[in-house]
Image (tube, rainbow, N blue to C red; front, side, top):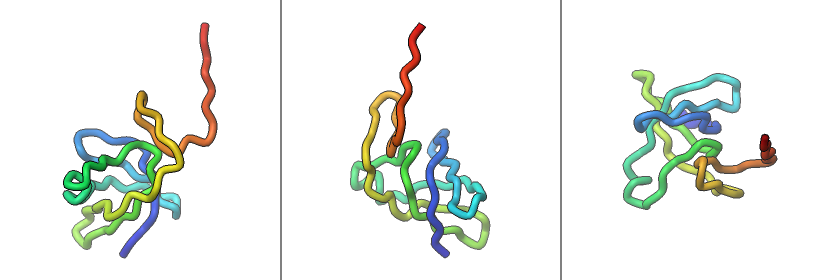
Length: 84
């Protein structure tokens, strides 16, 4: 079963994904991303495949509209800069 979501955070190779149905799941990217030289970052829209044992794997990272390098985030709609 495939589901679509947005990556909220990534820690130690595991990514917390907010699903379109409102739930969250912790997922791990497939090895093909490493071979392609692509790493998931916060804000990416991804397709997930959930296994019966509760594990979830990212199967696809959809095209990014934009990317910031530092901090590493993607698909930003609005940016506010605050200085003191």
